[in-house]
Length: 76
Image 1: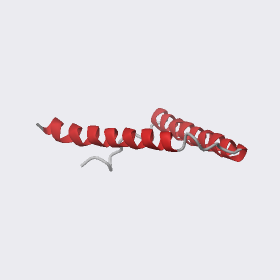
Image 2: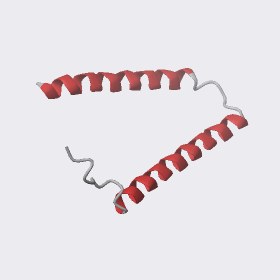
Image 3: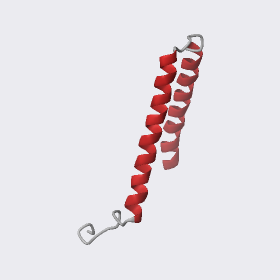
Image 4: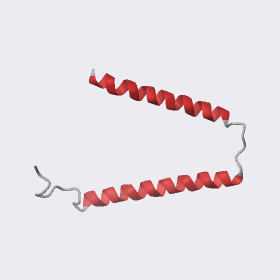
């Protein structure tokens, strides 16, 4: 029963997001994007990838060098 309480709202949110995305896609399909729009889109994708890769590199670096290990002060 607890899984149902979690998954039903998540599935509803996913369905709402997909409905909104499909409706927006159809609404904006007839509007041409200018050249600076493609540059902005590419820049946003590149920036997101750089931030994501950098954060994942920090996670792996932290895990490999023991920064995530518990010391004596962290134990209750």
